[in-house]
Image (cartoon, rainbow, N blue to C red; front, side, top):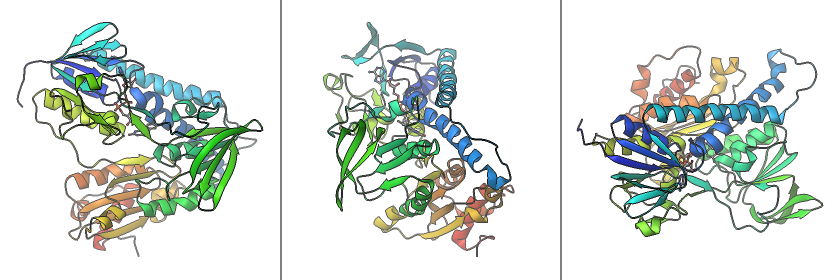
Length: 459
Ligand code: FAD
């Protein structure tokens, strides 16, 4: 390790990117100031990953209670949903994590300044204080994109920021946009009893997910009561008979649906406003602040990590970039993984890493496919969750190119695939790895072994 002199580092934004880089930099002996205008933890802890997964936890409990009969467990009476109880629990989970971040920063000697930061010439202004830096990290994240649709200002038309704090469960909910955020909230609100309709402008929902997985998901969504209308372009929203009325065009023509609430989930835009980027000469475009392979901006010594650089809008990507930049600034060797897993927390869960089959086809890469059904996995059946599949794409030598999981605990299972892929491994490494029985992990092992025709529980 190369040791450098301690530096003065200013970080703007206390989310998954900002607070992780602050802790790492401080541990390396730097003098670190973290500026946050709102609550520590950023989108992930306050308005993103954690509140959605806390709500998902309530939805899962409900899901299990409703399916109790198939386990021989019968609940007498009705199942009551208490929105304030759900919110209270969610807020407790969020609160404990946010205060945990505050304690971590304090314990690591990071100075936190509460205020909105503005970049000046060689310094940063926040809460009437001018902070000088040797190096600056911008980690201001993203905010929900609001499309230019007539009527979006109407009461009851919300973004994920507001929907997460619901006081009552809307009887009907129209979701505009079938990306990850839209589909996760569709699954959660559907479990809570909303009649959910998803309007997606593209021919398919979840454009980043392997299209075969999306095809397999479609009948499951239908069965669960979620209606998905694809190739549906929303034209306007208005109020009719006291309800929200959404007009959209499909190939069949113009249609209208009414609803109690409308969720706009058409993507996120980088939080670049009001930072003073133009004055500081920091280049950016619609997708975010432009960075090189070291996440350095067009101005030397100024870095941009996380959602604001528009590369990968995921919390763990922001944290990985944060650690990379912290090592780099501290004069240490810095490296970052190439394989970034992504998950969709629905019923069932979806997780993936590496290439999709469509991407391999488009790049003309030769590949083989192996699929293992959770229905042939003892643990999944014992859990009553035998629906789903693991699809593995590999090269001729048995190395993994992509893994796509739809089924129980997909989001936890994907990491073995990430490790194999990151190390350029596949069948042979999995062959030597003994998987405990009975576990869901055996399903991934079987799917990988299937690439070589060596899965035991496959016909
Ligand atoms: P952020 O977390 O957005 O943090 C930026 C911080 O900067 C904010 O706290 C903001 O207040 C502050 N800030 C902005 N401007 C200034 C300024 N001028 N001065 C001072 N402070 C400023 N990702 C996952 O990996 N898994 C998930 O399950 C997941 N679920 C999600 C669900 C929802 C509903 C949403 C909206 C997002 C979800 N994400 C998920 C995405 C994840 O939240 C983001 O990728 C992650 O938070 C990005 O971290 P960041 O540090 O770049 O920015």
